[in-house]
Image 1 (cartoon, rainbow, N blue to C red):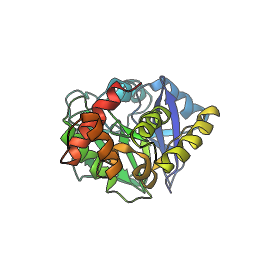
Image 2: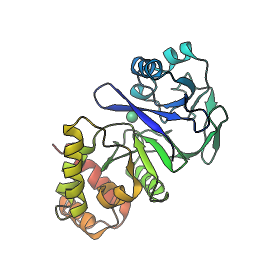
Image 3: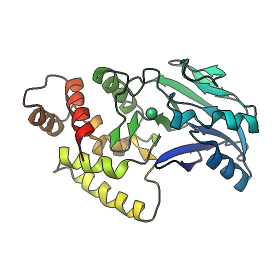
Image 4: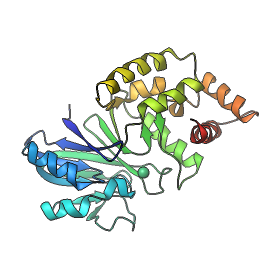
Length: 258
Ligand SMILES: [Zn+2]
């Protein structure tokens, strides 16, 4: 299994360091919004930066890139988007991203919705999905439509169930409060909430998650289940005919949820 460690940044971001299986001291960094905590971790653990992977253009995911490039001239791989000026290599749908320095390769999935050019990196039984899929929740649809975001989430849901899910933020506890409002009778949500409460009380990350768990607890991956559809229809006050409509109602509901 892939060896990955979190670096915490800002209030609730995770920057992921992926170790090379061949040379464990070499790492790729995913979404370094801030360079300082990454540099501190590299020094503390005697690691060498070998590549930078970017899922989307938001400053809290790319802000640290210029400073990291002053430390090491490494490839910066991200989506085709002019807003990512530091990108040296573009990752497009279906493309295999080779990281020969690390002995790793990831497949690119284009998953628009949170932003239009958002991508995920999938490989070695892991997916780095930025702000599209969170544990028990999903990102806001800032640029795309509900239809696009729902399609993107359905693509992620179709990956193998044992896939480890590495998200960009620690939002699991608040996401679960919403998940339980949508599905009060979902026992998996209740169990997971107890586990998450314990982890957070100890200051531990709730990530990575797995797709198998997300399919049980994440309302945004459950738009086709009767309980979730029923809750969305109650909220909307009308019949909803497809999963994207259910998703749209859930997303709007979550945006207002406190
Ligand atoms: Zn974002």
